[in-house]
Length: 236
Image 1 (spheres, rainbow, N blue to C red):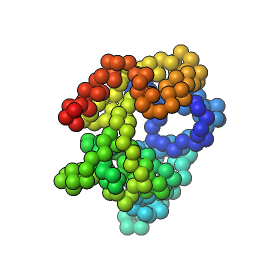
Image 2 (cartoon, rainbow, N blue to C red):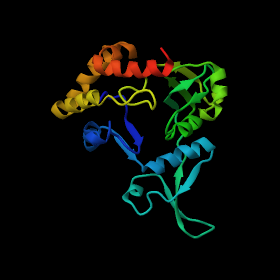
Image 3 (cartoon, rainbow, N blue to C red):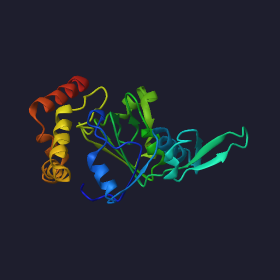
Image 4 (cartoon, rainbow, N blue to C red):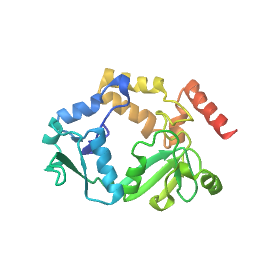
């Protein structure tokens, strides 16, 4: 809606299951205002994995026999070992990677609790990697629990402490999604379409001046719920 992107490469575009696929994205794609390259979850994960490994492609069985392949740059080949049909997907190297983690040290060793999804692969395959973190901790804490380190410091260009940085989505072990806030946004879209999205951007992004300014607009009950979780975790 903001007009900053011309193309999306993704496997899913929605604020969450209860609200379905993004109505704004659907409108922009149908009207030809943006290009969308949609992969299966495993398909795009394989592209990030190839980038993390530094190889130009990886084989997969995902998407074979589907209409996905009519619109994607994957290549079907016959496996030279088994004769079975496989799909080669090209590596996807992000120019800039931004990920959010539960904790990191000042050097950029990143630790993630819960499901990591593709964070590691996206980081290792990225040209420039910026990590936001709920808390910057002492390196001794990272070393004492080093099996939790998902991304090592040499793959990270910058680390920024941003408490509640995943809000209004969740950060496992710290806070849950703010469904009231997400539902409010969905209703703005339902009632006003693109104008609703622009109203949201104007109030919660453009006028706030900072992420802290954005959090200041969150209803007290939601903010208190998040803050309470943070205090319990960090002993404050």
